[in-house]
Amino acid sequence: MEIKDIIISLFALFISLALGEIILRMMPVEDPYEMEKYPTKHNGYIKSQFPPIVHWEFSTEEGLLGFDDKKTSFTTNSLGYRGGEFKDEEYRVFAIGGSTTECLYIDDKQQWPYLLQNKLNLAGHNINIQNAGKSGDAIDDHIAMLSHKIVHLNPDLIIVYMGINDVLRLVCNDNPLKFDRTGQKIPVFKHFLSELQLYRRVHNIISKNKYKHNIAFESDYVDKSAYIRSFPLSDSIPRIDTAFFKKKMEVLLNTCKNSSGADVVFIPQLATWHTDDEELKKWHWLTEICGIRYQPEVLTGIMDQVNTIIVEECHKHGILLIEPSMEPTSEYFYDDCHFNPRGCQKFADILFDSLQVKIFNQENVDIF
Image (tube, rainbow, N blue to C red; front, side):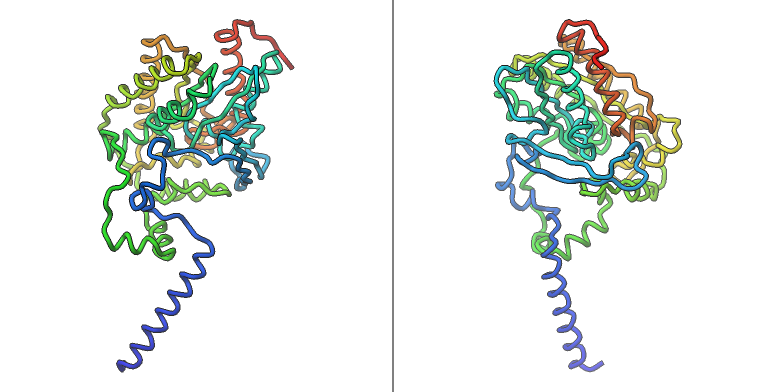
């Protein structure tokens, strides 16, 4: 090939890449290194929160366990919470947690905080429950959410349902001291290339955790679970250190008790890794952590350790604990830990029964 042909070929390639980049910028994806490159653009205290006044429409894929409605609404109020606007003379409740509290693909009127609010109001209370759950949030994020976005809003009750993301972080354990590494330096070539949409898409394709940080407006659990099953099932048992989680639990509990003045209820995390439901097993996708796909019984054991710390610390600090009993089946769950609509209803029923007696000092009655 002559030099002239090589130059023409390179020029054509450059033009093609430039046109591709222009087209892709019309459908941009997020920069995987944005937090490292532009730390001052982000709130260092609340790293995870929803914007106020959003109205998103989600859809669920065919066959997702327990879903009849394929289109669902997700809205936030003027403070960025899933719930109604504040009113005078109301009993104000905040639900804190990760995605199992957030209920992303559950419609506004089917998520468990909303159902619990309805049941309590039908029983004669004036309740406003704010859903402050956020996908991926773990105990550090719950402390930040409580300290910076909730305590000054005069809550009467705080409900904390947490644990699944703490298990994932304990197993991965790539940052054991939990220091905020926002602003860490990245190589110059990555800094430049990550400004390009072409690079971002290639990065997402080859990233091992491509599904862990991607929440789509249309659910993609079929692809997620299939991708995770492509990893070999390991017999390894991760070494975990729960000391930092226990210390953070003390911080969270003391913040709940001493800063808010509210009643506090903790709920240990429900998970389905030990299920006998073969259909539900097909939808598990959280069994791969940092490139290793663990045996279900291994993750169940770690989940039990985290829940044991939650229970022990609540007893130690005199915090009310509700330990729900729900079968780990596709009747209530659609994957490793997330409720389907019927699961949300069951969970709300359990919380209602306990809160009526333990918080509102009333006997349970059938309100329907």
